[in-house]
Structures are given as C-alpha cells and as structure tokens.
Image (cartoon, rainbow, N blue to C red):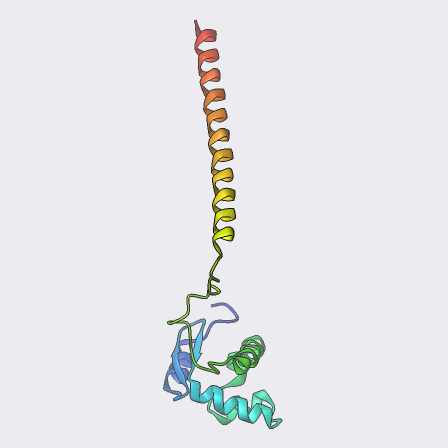
Length: 142
C-alpha cells in the first residue's frame, strides 16, 4: 500500500469513530459536528494534533499532509455562508450564470457562428487535400 493509504485496522478504527461519516483507504469524510468542534478548539489556540487526539483520531495515522489539507479546507469552509455543511450534493461546482443582455447574447452568437464557419472551412480544406492525395496515389499506381 502507498504511504497515504489506511490499513484495514486503521479503517476499522475510523469507521468506529462517531465523527466520521464515511471513509475509504484514501479518504475520510468528517461529520459537520467534528468540524464545528475542531474549529472552536483551533480558534482557541489548541494544536491540531491535540484536537485530533481529543476526538479519537490517530493524528499520525492521518499523516501531516492530510491534517494540513483538512485545516486549509476548514478555513475556507468557515468563511462560507453555508459554513461546514457538505454542499457537494447540491452544488455542481460551476459558478452561477449571469443574465446576459440581448446585445451580449447577440455578440456571443455571432462569435460562435464565426468559429463554426472557420471550423467548417478547415474541414472542407482537409477533405479537399485528402481527395487530391487519393487521386495522386491512384495515378501513381497505374
């Protein structure tokens, strides 16, 4: 197994932890409650390793990189309006589309049309060259 993978024993221990929603050999999904508790302790100056120990995690099994990434994600989540709530099921990850004016819509359509015309011209040229090559090869065979 790789360095970042959990052993079967570690997985069993993680699955028994009430602050783990789900886990695999590579990933852990922490409960929102744990994130809230972690954030409060972290803001009060408690070291991350001690916080993980306090809530039943083996910080050394998690590894330094996984702990560091968790803290970075937690900082970003704390700044969101949704907080620590898992928004992956409701959010496609794409930014919301702004409403375009008629002029902007027209400009986009003109640009799209121009690109498609260029693509069409290119494909016509490629077909012409291919046909020319086929004719040339058939003349050389005779």
